[in-house]
Image 1 (cartoon, rainbow, N blue to C red):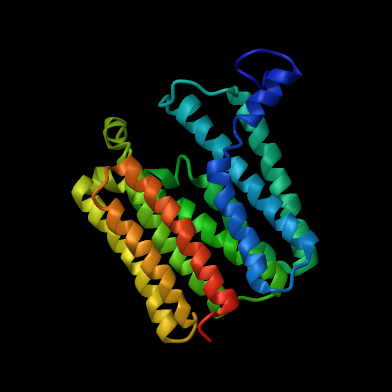
Image 2 (image 1 turned 90 degrees about the horizontal axis):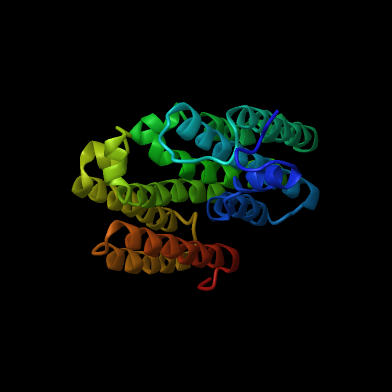
Length: 283
């Protein structure tokens, strides 16, 4: 069976397989898994590594399936490094690796840990061609995957879920969904030409941007509300102010620059929120 579409031999196959590793998209969910483990405060390295590896294979499955559908099924992409048969083989292999990790988590941390990790693969495998045809699931798929990674990373260590980690997951889902709407808007013309139903295509650019900032504002309001309820410490307000400042600057930028600013702003937001929760400097 030919796996690589370009070239032959082991090197061509390895290059084709390596092309599906996208650090920019893989690092945030992997970091969320690690962050969940850190929030648990009691870290068992073996369990943490297995969960992170499971998330990696879920992400790898998503990238291969997305390329397979967009190139071999829909004909939307100009090229793809893996043959159709190769994609099916790789999907089976990466999915098997994920479920092996899932079984290990079941054994080490219980059935609940496995069930909480399983949605990562479900979101990844069914993103294309099922979830990416609906503006809601197309927008929330990746942010939801990050939230699931965070919750799973915490649960496999702590054996339960705390109000703080649930709050983090909700905030990330809202904030990152807003950023995703703006990110999708930069491909508005292309998405419209292939009838891809992103929020920008369905609502139009202006209303999509309002929706995006509404989602991000919702995430920030959740932080303020949870601070008032003492779920987050008072210093968490600094994270809100930091991201709000970036969002105000990004509001006047075009979609590509706005996305870049907001993603970096989300890193600052996360860093300040982590420091606030971990060290509680004002208490």
